[in-house]
Length: 181
Image (cartoon, rainbow, N blue to C red; front, side, top):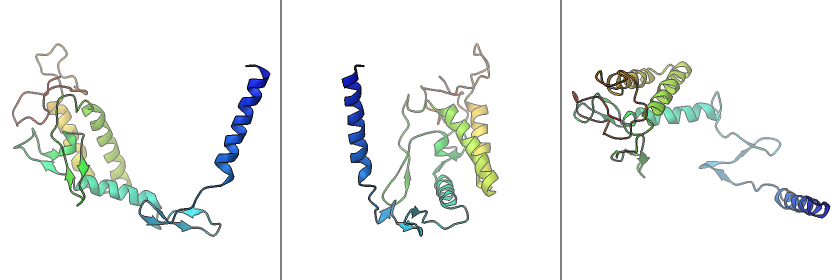
């Protein structure tokens, strides 16, 4: 880079630095639906005053959402479980009800990753909270993986985890063949 272009780049960088940082940030009255709270220095402080600050609140909201998640029975799945075990897509309507769209092929290629995340996060949540609801999610997830997400005995590699199934509905009726890849 020649001398004049290096100086031009430096001047542009300085100009944008002054423009971006000269005015400071605008303090809003509300953040994420809560009134802004400032400490004695005028710095925005956490508004949640629980023992561990916002962490406890966020953990509780996540856990309560998972605990109210719809479960499917044996009439719709190979074993009763929260529907997030079988289908990784969801949304919440305006009334707060969890809706799970119908699963389609190629939309559920993260079964192994999602199951690993569920087991690990529920172990951590149980360790943190002592909430026994986590244990049912852990055991149901493990049971599903072992019983329905492995290659069949007549496969070239029998008993291997199908961690990225892309075809075939995993929510088959009880007694049906193992998941297919």
